[in-house]
Length: 471
Image 1 (cartoon, helix red, strand yellow):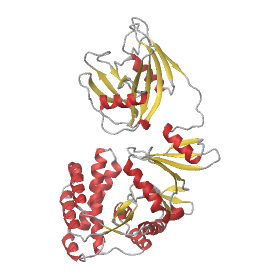
Image 2 (cartoon, one colour; image 1 turned 45 degrees about the vertical axis):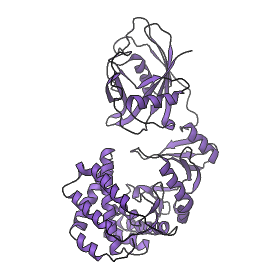
Image 3 (tube, helix red, strand yellow; image 1 turned 180 degrees about the vertical axis):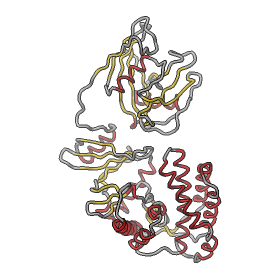
Image 4 (cartoon, rainbow, N blue to C red; image 1 turned 60 degrees about the horizontal axis):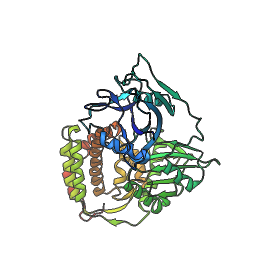
């Protein structure tokens, strides 16, 4: 039997293009001192995908979902020692959790990200053969070395790599097997699948599906069971109240944590430049949509807000090194005021209401999507992120509230300032730790505005809150 080993091509996009994670072997191991992909042999009764996920965890500490492993290259290799040949299967992974690090210091003394077009030397020749095929977009290579050949890749000498071409792609469908099976059971044969996930990654994945008859749907695989459960519940209970202004749930599968929804026809509002009058009209329509969503189910009394206090402390801990002078004092003052507010009623909320999750339909009216954060919450929760679009534009704020159907009470105004501050600190903590500059800057921008809006009159505003008032 030909031995099989697995190799992990952990890939990310760097400043100069695609990068892969490499480790330098050390100690009493084969090819000590040479750079190599994280790799290893199969354990008994273990399949190749399970093996590469395990090796990734053991060697680098990253956690990979089975569905995020895609086959990249197969290399038939014979080492220069003259021993029998083996098959190396190289797998590409672009999504994972955790930060790579050296987990086996007795076998590895270096680890880093390297551009695919600037791989380090010295590197194991066998590994380099697989990466050469991968860079060429080819599925396989033969790498039979001869006695006397060096273990390391010799860029100026003899290269035993023979690259093999594959058949042309059929149908353009690139979906993990489990998701494709789910999709085709739900909507029939898929002729094309194009990934349209949010470019920054780290979240749920989304594909635009096309059928041979011209039908179009969106397939979304959630990042976890909580997001999946929230979105499915929202689609089944609250989203129908929006009618044609939101997608319709076609199918859901808790096993693969995925949903299929109908496609909306429109353009993303995020980044769109609108005229002043047009944006006023859009904000008015968003107010109407938000009101419909908030009234799609009966209100509920809120639970204890101790968890909110704990959350604020946790986010402050992560954001503290990046806060400006006075930011933490402002947030703590708002947290104290928040704790003294009357207990609010809770309504169905979108949970992430911002232009990024809005389309402008063919009729010029807004459409809502992405309900994975939907849950019962305060109504002002849905205004916290959207309020960033009101900066310097009181006419947009007035238009939204006009569409919503009423103005905010003093209690609501103070609650909105508090929740906006908490969201800002959360955004700074998340953005700085996940290399998300837009979310980070939005958090800083929000806190700068709140210093002028909330800090000085905070005590008097808190005293004006009507005891027993709602929200």
